Length: 133
Image: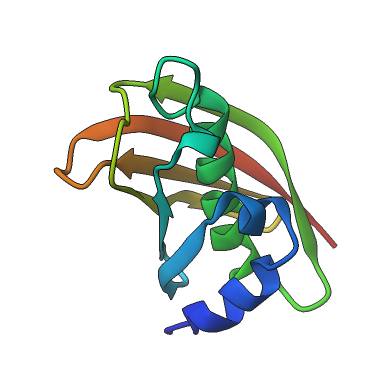
């Protein structure tokens, strides 16, 4: 099943994800891809992407992956998240890709990889989302 990325992007307007500039480019039940342009506002004093930006980017992408899989009327929240920072993002556009490790009735676990334009792995985040019914 394919999901309309434009509809998701409309829902992000006015949220932290929208403020950061996160944009969903592909969406299905087992795969979410988002992009985020690197710019000074999301970098640290050393000119690299702030770790909190990477975590927020991954958390948003994994949460969206959960939301598109929720039963009617359910909500979600992140209950655990772990990020490994592997390389510094400096310029261009980052790409986040969330894939499921577990899609259960009460929890979902997603792994989100973030890469730069050259395909270099910047971070890997594993997060657990609680399904609230």
